[in-house]
Length: 313
Image 1 (spheres, rainbow, N blue to C red):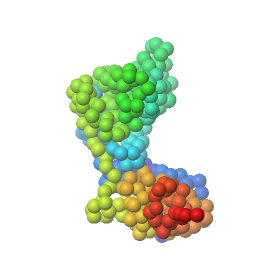
Image 2 (tube, helix red, strand yellow):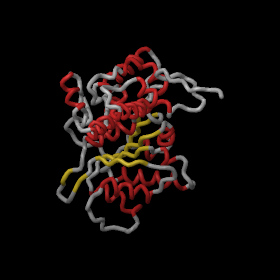
Image 3 (cartoon, rainbow, N blue to C red):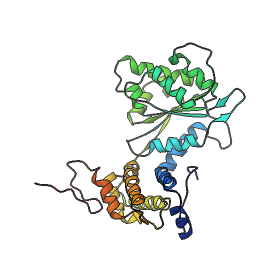
Image 4 (cartoon, rainbow, N blue to C red):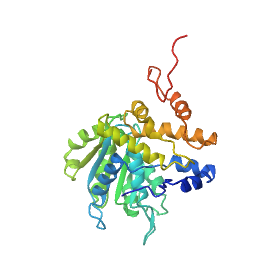
């Protein structure tokens, strides 16, 4: 089972007692970095592994393009970061090597800005004996750092929402230059419309392109059970003296999040930090109510954890 290296479980009373005696700053970081290997998390990690290293203890699969797609806040970024942490920088014959490089795109991203992001992500001391323009040495840097997989998050911004018509072509050129080396693969992470764009270009489609779509947990009986199990798993990873019994509130969490794990974690982070400030033995329902109070939209009249927005004068 693939797990975050900092994953810690506090299942017994003794483990929980030790956890609540940790320095507050350490407990805060544990909460912030909670990652649970639930259904969608395992699916996403498995997809990246099949693209990057399809044979266990084998060689990297190079020169191909893949997609990890889905709606915002379904956990794609956390999955990518967890995969990145399995392949940390290492010392090589000619300098520090970065087998997996992660960067995020942005609206109207340019090749020059992507190159600068690569430079920051690698942080490598290699000197590039090439042109001054970073848009021209970015691929060289990946090769020098022995990169096997380049992960580009929010990749829809590379091909859509470009300020100039030439922007998408420039981004296509960048990805093509990377995979044409035959030594680096590219994972495009983002919205489902990436699939439509990539499959319409033979240069991408012919690079063994494949994609996995991550969907939020649904309201089906099976997924609601999974949702409750996920909340139990999160609870076992929170550094409090007593369990918070989060599964009791699974309908409230689902109603608020629609099954998007990122939204669940937003509420839990705030609620857990309040519990730390209150020196509470666990997350209480009033912590959940306060965390959700500042997050619900103006037209949302649902009651979450017993909190309902007051209306009227």
